[in-house]
Every structure is written in C-alpha cells, then in structure tokens.
Image 1 (tube, one colour):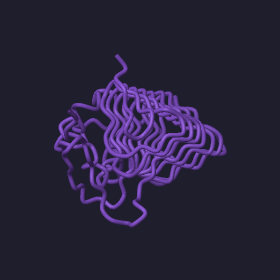
Image 2: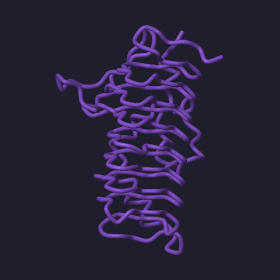
Image 3: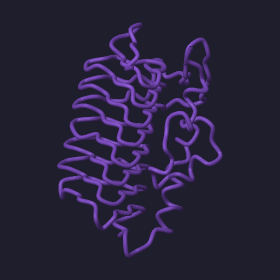
Length: 224
C-alpha cells in the first residue's frame, strides 16, 4: 500500500547525482525546497570554480563544457552543469539547475526546477516548479501542470494519506529513471516513484509507485 513515506526525498532521488545536493539537507519531502531554489543558485553559483564555470549575465553560470545553442534564452538565477546540452529555442525562465549531461531541447521551457544529472526534456516540454531525478526522461510534448485550475494550494496524496504542501505552484516530482510518455500531463502535486513508466497521452494525478507502469487512472501495473 502506497504511503507518504514513498514520496520522501530518500525514496525518490540519488542525491549524489546533482550539484544541488545540499539544498535537500534539511528537507524530508522534495517539494519543500521549491521556494529555496533561486537563493540557493545564487549562493552556489558564486562559489563555483571559474576554471570550470563561466558567469554569463546576471546570476547565470554555465559550465565551459556545456553546449548552448545561440537561439536559447537563459535567464538567471540558473546553473548549467558540465556537458549539458541546451538546444534550439530552449527557454530557461530562471531558478533552474540543469544537471551534468542533461538535455533541454527544442522549445522546452523551464521555471523553478532542479534537473538531476542526465535528465532529458528534449522536445516541446514545459517543466515548472518540479524536480526531475537522475536519468528521468519526459517524452515529446509531455508537461508538468503547476497550478490548480481553482488556484487552491496543492495537496499530495499517496494511498489513503494526504499532505498539505502550502504551495500554490507545484508541478511534479519525478524519481530517478522515470519515463514519461509523449503528450502526457502531470497534474499539480504528482509524484512518480523511481523507475516508473507512464503511458503516452496520460493524465496523471497523485502518486505513482516505484517500479510500476501507469496505464490510465485506476490502472497501474507492477513492472516486475
């Protein structure tokens, strides 16, 4: 039976796979760090070694080994880590950490996010107020919806338990190696456990357990 413990940081993420590991130190649930991302980036950015990272504009640090297309727009605060790839017309609105070897693709938009190392959001994705774990992948056109239609605060539900987050803006928490199918919508407060898969053209709400396959609402199968 799923429970809120399954949505905690240690159940979702390999913290060694992000330059932002320290931001999680005093948190239990990953969404607790969402309001802290901007200030954390500024403090961390100013401490980064200048032989590896170059400061570009106001509060934007880009690793010298990263590849950034000239048509991309990067607003600070932001850190683009080593060997990341920022492709044509990507739009990084600010408060964004893009991990080592991560891909931010064509017309993808990021806002207030942490992308762990090797994350791929490569085609027409919107990722806002979200955290994507190591090697998580969002298929073409899949997005995080980060504000409820009635503008009320987001509640996380797992099994019979629920927890008020106190946040109006909260997209999705994707654990390590999560695969989200094309054109899926992750509704506010969605949490997806490690190595889970989401079928294409899905509308996901609530918690998807680790090592499972989300087929449709009410139909989730074990992978093994």
